[in-house]
Structure formats: C-alpha cells, structure tokens
Length: 111
Image (cartoon, rainbow, N blue to C red):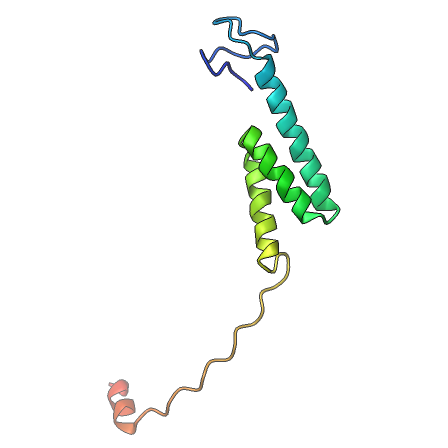
C-alpha cells in the first residue's frame, strides 16, 4: 500500500494515517497475507501441485488484486486445457491438392 485509501496521503508504515487518522494496520496485514499466499502458490507450482497453486492464487486475488497472480492463474488454466507451453506448435495438416485449372482460365490469366 503506497497511499491511504481514504485520503490518498502517503503511507508511512504507521498504524494510522497521518492526515485523516484512518486505521491502516489491518489493511497492511491483508497485503502481507496476500503476498504470502502468492509466494506459497509459486512454490506449489514449482513443486508441480497445480491445484494447490490455483487455490492459493485465488485466495491471494481475493485479498489483493495482483497482476502476477492473474497471469499465473491463466498459465495454470492453459496447462489444464492442454496447451503446449514452451513447445513448438504441431505442424499444420497438408492442404488438399488444388483442382486442375481449366485451360480457358489459364489463357485469361496470362493477359
């Protein structure tokens, strides 16, 4: 948290906002919890536990919206959908041979 959500004064790590007096301690604790969930999710993903990682990422997102958590959730969804991440895409199927072009059309094309 960079600023007080009430008056937008700079946050200076005090339990209360210096300008409006709003209690900020609990909000700071929620941010710390969100960061902790994000780190745990990354560790779970590194261990190959995608379901735990996805659950932790959703919990982190509920606490605080974070771009990295959203991107990692998309990555896990892509893996679960069978996307080929980090591998070359399969070669496309060969196209059907074109039908023979009539001689009259070939003549007109030359002009």
